[in-house]
Length: 204
Image 1 (cartoon, rainbow, N blue to C red):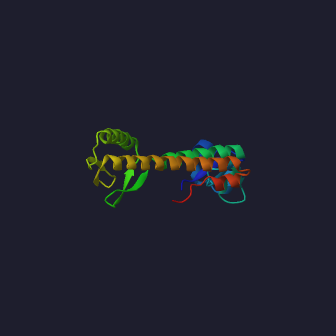
Image 2: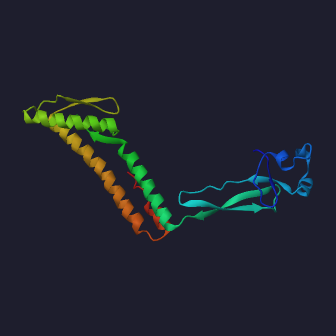
Image 3: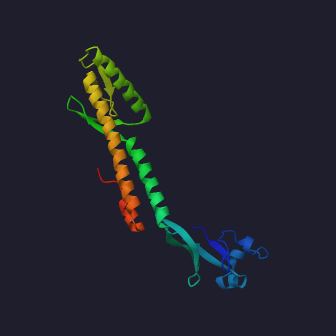
């Protein structure tokens, strides 16, 4: 840990002691008592852990210890700020979940996953359109390939491809609906702790 110093009573901590006592040669050799004669003290800077619903408050200096300890109070944010932060966190996690791996059991009986990134969604939309066209001309054979996240390729009939596309849409929509349920709970929460408790995705 880098040795820090500050000018008494409430200067900014710095590791550059010569800048605080420019006229003293080799100030690092000074004792704590000698530093105090120059209104300077050694200090330890402690950054307290802060949760997402908290913020750093006023600086606090404990001069009873040697070196002095400089830290900051931890304050709870106002309720409306916590609500806004909670909803943003839920939205971010919702977007991440919707881009995640969707499990699907294919007609072969194998369960594989699909990473629902933008490219996959475009490909799936194109395959669904193709499935509608093939169905309209009476194609019922498994002629539509689909490769999963595990790099396994399944050949689906047009009807099976449409079922798969519908399952993906429902999966995507279910995550959105869950986020709105959480949002309603966040909005209804009347205390910061209630917001914290509400802003949690249920375990899958």
